[in-house]
Image (tube, rainbow, N blue to C red; front, side):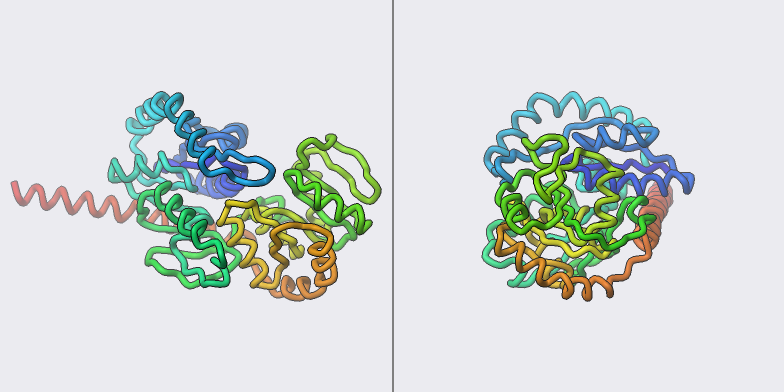
Length: 368
C-alpha cells in the first residue's frame, strides 16, 4: 500500500509521534513517503528513508505568548515567498506515484492534496480533540473566544477526513462519528524506560524567570532545560541548567520526582506514561495547551496554573502524594493500541476507496 504521510513542522511533538507510526508502517511492508515542514523535516529526514520538505506555518512568539496578528503576517509573507515553488515540486512527484491513502498529522497541504485528488484521508493527531469532542464549561472557562478561534483554525488546517484517530490521555464525550480516541503515542525510548523516583524536579521552560526565582527560594533540586539566554550548562545552588540532550533529558525525566512544563501534549503524555506529577503552565494564547493542562488537573495527574511562582510551586509540592495516587491508576500498554488502530484505519480507508472505484467502473460500463 502506498501511503503519503504529512507532518506538521511546528515543534517536535508531531515529528516524534509520526516517526513511531511511520516506522511501524514501513516494517509492515507499506511504501511510505513523508512530506514535512520546519523542525519536523529536519528531524525526520535524518531518520527516515524518504522525506520531502514543504512549506508549513509557524508561530510568532514573544515572552512565552503567541501573538496572533504577528503570526498571521509571518505566515502570509512566508507563503508568498515559498509556497508555490515547494507545492509544485512535491505535488508533481506525489501525483506520479499516486498514493492509495494519505495520513496527516495536522499537516494541511497533504490533506488538501487528498481531498482535491479524491484520495482517502486519515487524520492522526491530538489537536482534533478540539473539534471532535465536547468540552464543558470548566474546561473552556473564561477563554471562550480562544476556544472558538482554536477550533476554527483546526478546521481550516485540515479538510474533512474520512477517519480521525485522536491521541489523548483524557476521554471527553465524542461528538462526531468516525472518531477514535487512543492512548498517546510516546517515543520507544520512553516505553522502554524504567521509571524511578528521585528528588529532583525536571523543568522544561522557554524562559520563565519567575519560576527560577521560586525554585531558588524553595531550594528544591531542579534540572532545567530549554531556558533561553541561560548558559548551556551550569549550577545555581540546587538548580542545574542542562544543555540540550535527548538521552540526558530522558534520564532526568525517568528519575524525576515531578515535572514542571508548559501544556504541550507530548511531554505531558510522556510524564503521565512514566507516572510523574506535572505542574503545567500553558502558553498564553494557546488554547490547546490550556485544554491539555485543565484535563491533566481534572484527571488528578497534576496542576494547571497560569504562572509558576512561589505560591503555585508550594501548593504543587504539598500535593505530590495526591497526584502520585492518581497516576498509580493510569494504564497504557506502550503504543500497541494506538498503532494497531491507525494501521487498521489506514488499511480500511484504502480498501474502501478501491471498492468504490471498482463499483464506479462497473456502473460506467453498464451505462455505456
